[in-house]
Amino acid sequence: MTSSAEIGLLIPAETGWDEALEWGGRAASAGAGRLWGTGDLAGVALLAALARRVDVRVGAVVGAGSAPTAVLAKHLTGLDVVAGGRLDVAVEAGPGAGAVLAVLAALGGGEAYHAEGPIPVAGARCLPPAAQRPAYPLWTARPVRAPAHAPEPAGTPAGWSEAGLGVVEVTPWQG
Image (cartoon, rainbow, N blue to C red):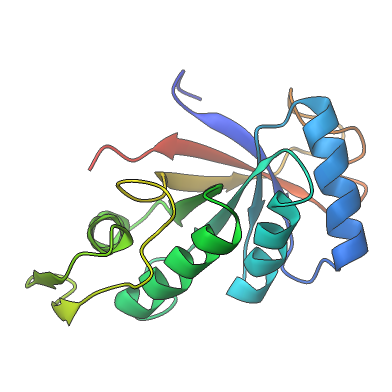
């Protein structure tokens, strides 16, 4: 792991509100900097609402090609507003991740955007824009799961593995 990478708690998409609230509180108490959600954005929306109740940042881990990028950007800017400007976005490292991150960076600020290339975008604009300026922080992600006999990664709450939670390693995107 590089010195610029961070570890965050990965909450499965199917986690319910009470369980997410419990893990959010435990993560904040243990000093975990971020909770990350995967899967559909409904799970990330739950985490965005959680950010209003627990002192922790939340993030969405998405795959390149998981949805049309301009549509994804619209959903994410709305979630950043709901989360009170406490949303981070990570794209799973791999082919196409850089192009997705570039479009998300451009659209997160609310300005009209046009691009040709790997992900063509014709006049897209996200309103309202992200609550953060110029947009939400962008990361590349690599989900990791420690072997059952390995100690839990530093900064994660005790019992994460028994609860079916995972860990994600994120690195700031240097667009």
